[in-house]
Length: 323
Image 1 (cartoon, rainbow, N blue to C red):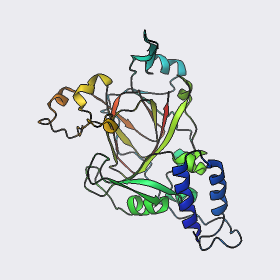
Image 2 (tube, rainbow, N blue to C red; image 1 turned 120 degrees about the vertical axis):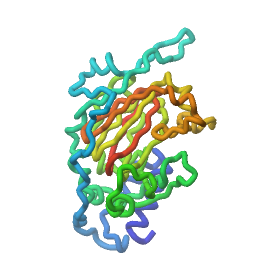
Image 3 (cartoon, helix red, strand yellow; image 1 turned 90 degrees about the vertical axis):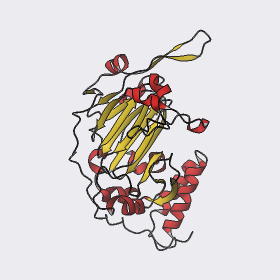
Image 4 (cartoon, helix red, strand yellow; image 1 turned 90 degrees about the horizontal axis):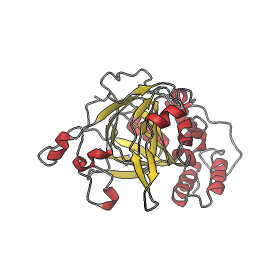
């Protein structure tokens, strides 16, 4: 790799594929490579790159939470969160853990509004300055359950240019455009420059207090995560833009028609926003609740709850999974 961009890309791929192996060494090498100009790896360090003139992504939500059926609460204490909302497990007679209380979703309004990311990440120029040269996995296509869905590696700068800043004005009802999504990626382990702008929500100390994964979700309006479940407590923190989430309790699983394949068994075969009731008749009686997330909000999704997520704007979210 002769250029800085090529070297950074190769090192990013090594970092993503290698996991903890040589992680510290790779971070050190990446930092050194990024100090040199893009033309050649040979030469003296150059001054800090000029900041790109970026697009400011909308901070004025055009949606309201008027139709939401998930409670919105401010300043929820740890005690109240554990008592009123958090899923709980108990020991069964054979010593294994079983779910005793499936929990209740809640929007923790303004819970992360103090994060520096809330203002900083609205600025496309800031994001590009910090991580524009970093290579990340991008999902292309409507959702991962569609045949046309694919993945590719892209520099964050190219992803923003092609799929976010230069796509024009889209209708929020438009599902036909070529959507791309940086989804469920441990971006903050790969790129510590952005990790400084967020902090772990206090609720993660409950349970075992062990955070399993911190993932980034970044893309244009109309990105969708189809209805699926996760095995961990989940705090979905909204940083930029708005998202709409539809949730179904674990008791609705028989009406959700999970995929038969083991690796997809946590994903519903039903398009829950436009269901085919001839193919999935039991879904007609499935109960659900809705939540809208705005910058600074956090949605608690208990383990085992089905959830469908759609971005209403250019959106950047951070999810915390913990046990």
